[in-house]
Image (cartoon, rainbow, N blue to C red; front, side, top):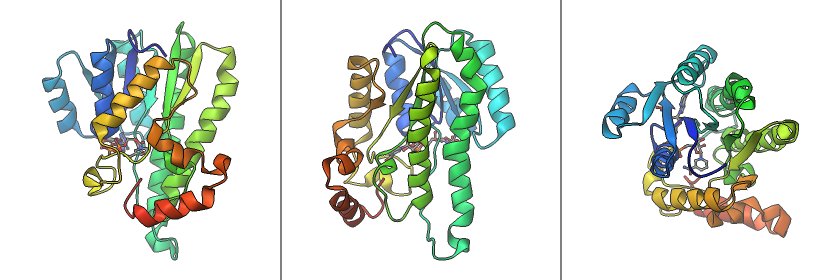
Length: 254
Ligand SMILES: NC(=O)c1ccc[n+]([C@@H]2O[C@H](COP(=O)([O-])OP(=O)(O)OC[C@H]3O[C@@H](n4cnc5c(N)ncnc54)[C@H](OP(=O)(O)O)[C@@H]3O)[C@@H](O)[C@H]2O)c1
């Protein structure tokens, strides 16, 4: 995607990476629509950043996705970029169903079914635009497992393969698929993670990601330097060591 001149909807941008990315893209000359469930944050963001539009959306709810999509497209018929940012991460213990099943269902509904339904709601509109992009959001944990978050890791691996697959199908359209692959970044994705010294500071991550979006407008994946350790363990041949290092050094990490 071009770095400027787009109209971009980011469900999952009331906080963390989504909000920082939304503000950075707005500063680069894009129209940005922020989405999420927390209406108090939506109101505060709209008040603090005149010109940014906001829409309430719960991406676990098909009806909410449908009505938010209608609202966004009615107000922004030139929308050409969808960023499927909404996500949750949960620590699970898979020894007995009580300590993982409900969590696993929530994680898969939010992190996998949510993006699928969002793409379903916008694909026909995006196909009619001369130049459109769907930015999916996976994780370094799509490629290296963190022991304490099995469903999360699996959900992000699913997003990686979904991105790879639909990129092939949509090659005959004007819709590009770009996968953002964050490393561990300091946000509130897990309690206390904002202060995780093993994680990349949020502003540093977003600045590097936006610079990559600008310098590589046709990139399949946006990979900041810090994610390559996780992303390429298998290809380098040091996968077992990467898994060991990640699980030893970063008990709460992403
Ligand atoms: N931080 C990391 O280390 C890291 C690493 C790799 C990938 N990621 C991915 O980056 C994305 C953003 O996470 P973050 O780290 O920035 O954490 P965050 O601050 O917790 O942001 C998560 C965002 O998702 C939204 N969200 C969650 N459930 C939702 C739902 N049902 N409907 C609509 N929106 C929902 C939240 O908004 P509301 O609560 O207002 O709905 C919030 O805006 C996630 O997909 C995450 O998996 C993060």
